[in-house]
Amino acid sequence: MRHLQQLFGKTMCNSSSTPVLHGYFRSSCSWRVRIAFALKGIEYDQVPVNLIKDGGQQLTDKFKTLNPMQQVPAVEIDGITISQSLAVIQYIEETRPGPRLLPTDPKKRAQVRMICDLIASGIQPLQNLYVIQKIGAEKVQWAQHFIERGFQALEPILKETAGKYCVGDEISMADICLVPQVYNAERFKVDVGKYPTIKRLNQTLIEIEAFKVSHPSCQPDTPADLRA
Image (cartoon, rainbow, N blue to C red; front, side):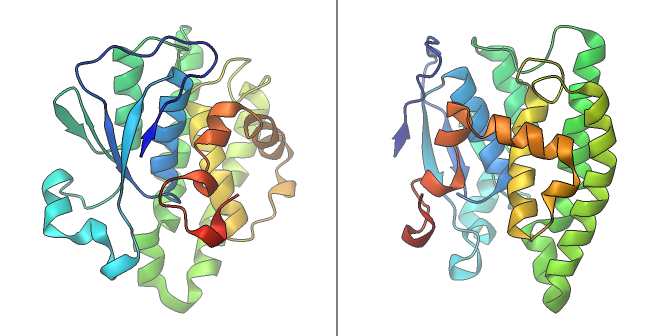
């Protein structure tokens, strides 16, 4: 299914072919890419990769040729395949017009990257599907522990950097990383109310159209019982 994200009156990119996102509706890393595409007003196709069905479609030999790490997302764009969400986002930031996802000020850019790395390296990998499947019966407690640990670090950082959004008053890659991580926290029954800055920012962001249309509840592969 093709997603035509003509948001905020932005002109869509005139590339030689439409990017293809191989992802999973509830993958937070896939969601990051969907948000970025939506913010940039980029038309793209989706190829669902079910992380549960048949033992995980990402583990097939066919998908391994696309992404040797056997994870989603993988994005085919401009004749190459990019398999890490932040790399995808930075590539489209550097090659496509539309709202910038990194501030022009070097200090703010560093803050955005710091927040992204904290989430993408310090929280999300420790509670992703592959890891919690290995943990077994204690998977919920494991995920809660590492999300709480990360949020305890993230909250004071955001208190210092935030304006309307994570860093100042412009949406950035930091916001793109934050919303899917809060969604994961809520899935694992973490009390986000203990982190008022995180909660406020998330509530603001989820009302923005790019975050709505990219939400896991309204993707081509969203199961019927989880649709909005």
